[in-house]
Image (cartoon, rainbow, N blue to C red; front, side, top):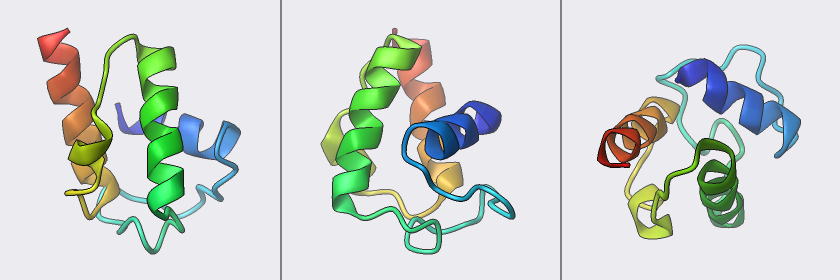
Length: 76
């Protein structure tokens, strides 16, 4: 799932993904609140399940985002 996140970040949000790990903070990945809203919409379209924007505001690392993706996938 982390690889999917990296692909989305790099391809669609144009975030440089070199060196990103699950422990990378959203700030270090240069993801601001607008980018998180975009990410939420992209994940819904590309993965077929919803991750509410408010869920993304409570995460601090890319690993946290992956956890939300996994949880949303099991609920879908």
